[in-house]
Image (spheres, rainbow, N blue to C red):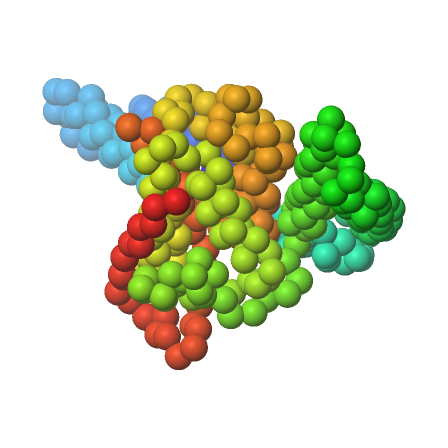
Amino acid sequence: MPIRRRLALTYGSVFFLAAGILVAINYVVVDQIVNQQVLAEGAMIHQVGEVVPQPGPPPGGSRALLASSVNDQIGRYRELVMSWLLRWSLLATAIVGLAGVATGWLIARRALRPLQTVTETARKLSEETLHRRISLGGPHDEVRELADTFDSMLERLDRAFDGQRRFVANVSHELRTPLAINRALLQVSLADDALPRPLRPVRDELLAANGRQERLIEGLLLLAQSEREVTVREPVDLRDLADRPDLPPAPTVGDPVLLERMVANLLDNAAKYNDERGLIEVRTATSADQVAITVENTGPVVPAGQVALLFEPFSRLERDRVGSASGAGLGLSIVRAIVRAHGGTVATVPREDGGLAVTVRLSRAALHGVSVGGGCGEARSARSW
């Protein structure tokens, strides 16, 4: 239950309780007063009946009848007074309680408005908007202190992310350049046909190791960049990125470079961890507000409980799988980071006869005149590798 509703109910309950206590006290006090007044009037009637002389011989029991009639009238009057008192008191209690609920609702709204500002600002924040601050005004109370503390935290995060971006840029330069130089030296110095035959496997192994290191560094840098907020948003068709013109359009909006790498990683992963069947199937689908691309492949059987591990960096289910030596274990990790940066979802389902079906869903948008209205379409394209 929202805190605003809880506060309103709390205020209303307090008002109801206070009004109920006042009604009970008022009822008891009035009852005592009325009883005392009734007793006084009854005693006065009896005294008057005894003092006033009755003309002629008094009829038998007339004084008792008179006293009984007066007592009945007084009793009915008392019951009428207490009945009306109870009714109006309960009505007043209900009115006061409802007024307390309404007052509590308004007070809670006013008191929680600064917290709503803090929440909305926190929801809008991302890596690219960490420069924004709450800057809450008003009195220096607990809410203002919370907002100031949150601003201080944002300041530290902004500096940390800025330092991370500079570090990624420096690493990109410092690591790529030496590896490129090493590769060039190996290719030039060891490319001579006169190289002794025993050294040729060493040359090939060095070049392969150099290539794996370059792919690993490129994957790590791309993973770090993919986890940041997307700043470039352009119309993109997942059908074109998958190079499947026979599929229906799947228009979305995002960073073309990152989305192209996402689709390429899905296809590369499907080809790399395939088996002798070598089948890769690509499907696109559209709905009213989403587009989806599914890449399904044949391959080794993947236990359902270990599917989530495939999206962790450097995670492989089997080290000796076909093609695993050429990968860095970052393919699906990069896919997940790119999808999250675009506000989408990725789901993986293992096939019964081996292999995986990976489905990425993103927001739909107009692309090249394609309508974004209702309706859906799905087609598939299969290739053997």
